[in-house]
Amino acid sequence: MWTIRDAGANESATAIAIWQRAVAATHDFLSPEDFAEIEEMVRGFLPDVPLTFAVDADGTVAGFMVLSEGHLDALFIDPAAHGRGAGRALVAHALAQFPRVVTDVNEQNAGAAAFYERLGFTVTDRSERDDQGRPYPLLHLVHEAGASPAAGAATQDG
Image 1 (cartoon, helix red, strand yellow):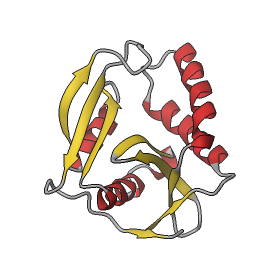
Image 2 (tube, rainbow, N blue to C red):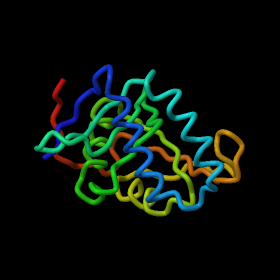
Image 3 (cartoon, rainbow, N blue to C red):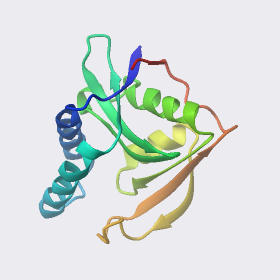
């Protein structure tokens, strides 16, 4: 069972640490220079955006998302929690708020692309480069109301 809650004012460091571990485990296609540059960018914006956490029964934050007006800007799960439903719970929470959710995923991150497909997202477009112009193709995805739901045990706390 996952508790979904808003992050507190001083919890961005938790999200940054999860981001580091998640990207190290799933983005082996990134060059070390690109990883460092992206990390600097993430450190700059995560403290200023609304973060939503998936928290386990022991109070450990397993992952986070950044959701703005139906756009899932970020979803990262600690590798230690992969396959336990935290990502599914966060997506279910997003879909409960918005009938249409869009997101982008790196094409080389096959595990993430498969995750979104399992939850009912479909590819609407593809870009050759990421948002910063790097040679990492993006798949643009959408989940429309009425598509297979992202079922998951999620509760709202906070």
